[in-house]
Image (tube, rainbow, N blue to C red; front, side, top):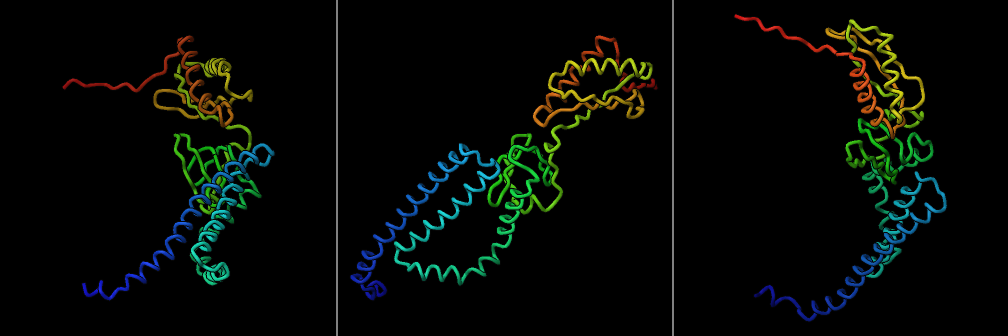
Length: 269
């Protein structure tokens, strides 16, 4: 009670009446301002797509403009509260070195994103293997590269990390080799089996017209292991992979070729 009695309730009430409208106005500025920024970013994206701008640049420009506009909204809200813009700018400048040091990693991701857009080691839509993550690039943002993996996961990788190691662009050369292994019984003639496999692969419509490699890879305990190497695009890779095996199995069945399996001998005790 003594504590409450020492408080000037009148002065407190006057302070509340003075600052409450400013705080409410600042909150409204932030809410409305952020909504407008998101709307502008959305419209910019549609405009960029219609204008034919490089699709790699669109998410980068959208995120960059969004960040800059949101900073302006925050500065405006601070001005509504009563913070002098000049003082606010001086505060930002004074804290610039400290913020720069704290954000050195973030700024390196930004610089890496710019380098990706300039030198284009990968583009939006490319199938890549970056830091062990294999998938299609869906966005190149200001600070991050977004990859949709082959098992339908969304990986958000900082640009600095994406460019700090070996990057494998599986789309860049226009085609991928599909590595298959087929077992051939020892008693079968290789040239005969090779012809059967070639005929089977001819039924795989998704493969590229390049001549597939069909050669002996090694001798297994029960069969001769053949290396079968057709070609595909990054989009048809798995279709070629599975359909090739399906057609080869069907062709082997039609030709009466039976693949040997390991046999176990059980001794009677």
